Image 1 (spheres, rainbow, N blue to C red):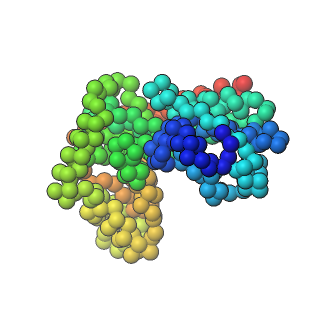
Image 2: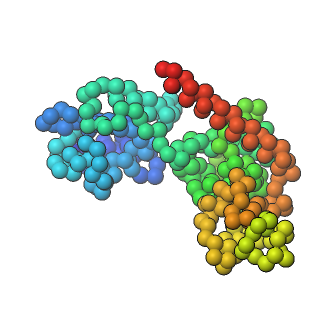
Image 3: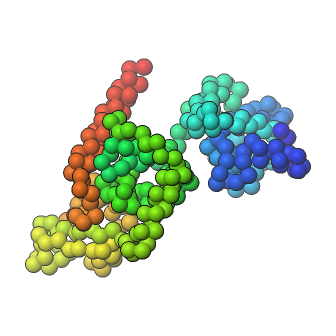
Length: 311
């Protein structure tokens, strides 16, 4: 189609290809073709509407070959082709495969990278299990999908993924698949309803945002009185723990402290961990499962690296 999109008919056609909302829509591949030189640029997105708005509004950095040319000559200098993928037949990953196929063609000379960008941590998968890790309720391809489908905020995902902490007292969020788990036959609609019921319970109990933590004072700590060394301080939330550390002159972000808890990492001779009353009954077993699959993933990545080096 010709750019810019100016007629009601073309706007309607664009809606059919990309969706009307930048938060919900279709995945696929798009190609910009420079009318005068026939130079081409290919890209893909799991939310085509949001990506098109990004280009149409012109609020982008002048990097690479394509974006400076688009800024200089405007949308009118390009034609646009969009391939919408049927979500019933294709996954978001398929759009990356199709993009990579086009990148093998030298005609796409406005692309500076010849290998698709598979995304950042936002594209890391998340698996929703029961507390025994025996049932898989949902597999999200990213934190964004988890937020969009199950209404679990990305900040909440960061807190719970691989933490061994039960989410809503019923679920475990992991970044690795458990091969022995059975896939639940519960529908997404029923799963959302189940989570909503648990959220309402937590609201009633006043425990939704409060996860108590313990701060163990290790030997060699110079920030507290010597009488407190070897003791453990209790806090009703991560926030109150961070505030206590700040009063001592130590600054740490919430995300960083969460990561330290997951990795059992010491911070200036303080060891922060979740309180025992927050942990599921099978905490140790789940911890072993998570650690085992982390190790398996690292070994798999190393094997892949060795194979690539041989090639």
